[in-house]
Image (tube, rainbow, N blue to C red; front, side, top):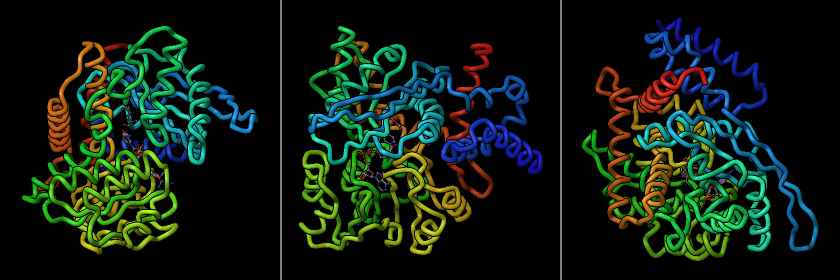
Length: 450
Ligand SMILES: NC(=O)C1=CN([C@@H]2O[C@H](COP(=O)(O)OP(=O)(O)OC[C@H]3O[C@@H](n4cnc5c(N)ncnc54)[C@H](O)[C@@H]3O)[C@@H](O)[C@H]2O)C=CC1
Ligand SMILES: O=C(O)CCC(=O)C(=O)O
């Protein structure tokens, strides 16, 4: 069996690599899923005959477009815009937009591919998509960001809709950008529709959407810890990033009695052994969301250490929550985390652990939650925002939070169902991949050769 699995995986990966030889991030994401689902496929050969995997790796549609905009000096700038409409077997395309200079088709296809299984795990009726631009919002004025968003939406609006494709935020796209994008959609289409999620509360947004990804990653970690009789109380937690996901992961850790000792951005990390308390976290939110400053200013204000150009994985901790970006934990850093006694890793970001790091965590049998399960809370509450928009009403904060919590517990349960292994151990990577895959594969089979 082992041999036929590895032969199948290798042959399928050769096929994927031959199609798009330079999309390394996409290959990485596909490889992980194919490794997990191959034993299931070999037991269910009907899915092999139906070429479910071949169809899953081929986006239903890729849209690429020019985004011209005028900067504050009156100069014309040109960026590249994308929307990858990956899979609509479970519902309309759903997934975020990323504005970051590293954005390219490989990154967006990896994110859209992951989104397929993540959205399936939420059990809400959402297909998968992802999009964005190589535009860098850093060091741009509000007016520049607005002009860029308006130009981006001038093209994107013809491809999306409340029942077709519903984008949201991701790196570099927060409440400000969603507002500008929504305004331009409304202006061109003359309709006030639930076409984006992550909207402001006054104009169709949902309570708890900003918090959802970070809270969800902590709820998921909490469920894993419960299985070993543990909790966050008194635990030392390292977090990377200081954006949306990191901020609310930190908030939930504080609520549950943990001590957050690191935060980071693309320039370096801060180490605060006393812990980031509520007041310091409010400062980080103001610094990052309003002033758009750098995390090093935290170290200057609170007199703690700042490590430029470094990531926080050498710091001793019980729990690590990578919440910044892909491939931000290498195999060596994973080894360092394990040597320092880390027992729980919950991926707030998408694919933050390199394959070698995942291997280390699985070998060590620590509690390791892959992003497509652990960070599904964000898109889940986006699904709840869509439901509220359709009903034209708003749920209370507690109601949305409870639904989020229930969804994260249910995802945890699904992962256990498919990932339980001999020796009282759960392989959450296999669990998430197989549980996510089964639903999508069944829907694709039912819907015919499309
Ligand atoms: N916002 C959401 O609802 C969801 C986000 N995610 C994932 O979570 C991660 C973070 O996203 P957000 O917090 O929304 O974005 P954000 O733009 O609010 O924050 C991103 C953070 O990552 C840091 N960062 C970006 N590139 C970096 C690099 N190369 N090295 C080190 N740090 C870097 C930034 O400085 C910032 O602190 C991403 O992987 C995203 O795909 C996943 C699910 C949902
Ligand atoms: O809320 C959404 O639709 C997007 C969330 C997202 O992009 C993600 O889960 O990676």
